[in-house]
Length: 222
Image (cartoon, rainbow, N blue to C red; front, side, top):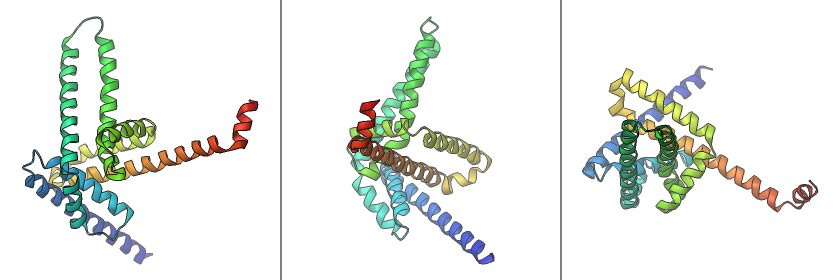
């Protein structure tokens, strides 16, 4: 029993070491891109490396990270700046809604909440989808909305954990520069993979029902 606990503790320390190392890689690669052009490729490389780590534990973190950083440099920047522009537009719209005291304020606020919800879902899932499926930006965004909406439980749990993390950073701010970014995107990536796998299972079941003549016959009788 003691050996199992020791082994589990060792695995946790090893996992923590790699989380810290990935966080360091993210900081260095963000600086290499002069921050403005480095944050999004660094984030994309981080997510891609975490995904590969999930699939195969025996990986070279540095090589995987460097390869993804170069591969997604342009695409991730385009996608990242697109999200920044849309986020800024939503922020301006919110300020206008708050200042607008007309009878349509509630309607505008409702529409804004729906759009903000879709934006957050898209923001959470698009980068992991890009790393997992290597899609075009437009296709990645479309799949992010679909998977996020049809995976409400996974999305809710992910969002809840991310909110709780903010309290952890406030309580122990020293952890933020050490594991803040890598741990955040580790959670996002792992839960995104769960959502992908569940969505694929749902799709397979639907296809089986459509291609199953017995199920079709039962539906026809009904």
